[in-house]
Amino acid sequence: MSTSALILHLTSAVLLLFLLSSAVATDHIVGANKGWNPGINYTLWANNHTFYVGDLISFRYQKTQYNVFQVNKTGYDNCTIEGATGNWSSGKDFILLDKAKRYYFICGTGGCFNGMKVSVLVHPLPPPPRSSMAAEHSSRDSAAARGGGGRGVVGFVLSFVLSVWLGSGWI
Image (cartoon, rainbow, N blue to C red):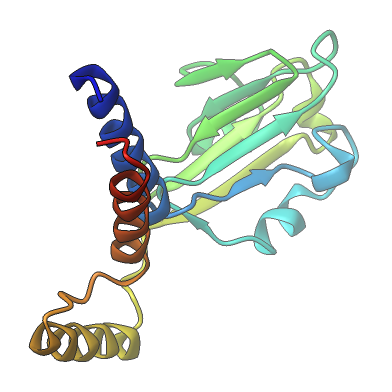
């Protein structure tokens, strides 16, 4: 097997492992199947969701009629876009919630006065549950004593991929 093919296969394995071990972010679609439109209670919608750092909030709407502005609390309360920190107008906007804080979004075409505004509180990522951490340490310790290293699913996948490559004559 050529060196470039080997590098390609190893890079693919590393990418696969990264994807398996990464936390999955949630995409919160504002208004769910009703989208970003006037006359919807977005406060009720937001109160039924828990937002974490790394999640996305997405807005779906008619791009010729509406838009989205990220504003401060004053802009939210008064439906003004002065001092906005972000604006989107594609009709299918995905916004990364990258900090633990309260975010304020409004429609800047007048829809805010008809309820097109939403405020969401983003929480830091929660730590893993205590019991699973203890179980992980316990299983890791016992696996290490057996020589397994306690790699879990990621280790299994890596072992499988390598055994397939080695067993198939790729390397």
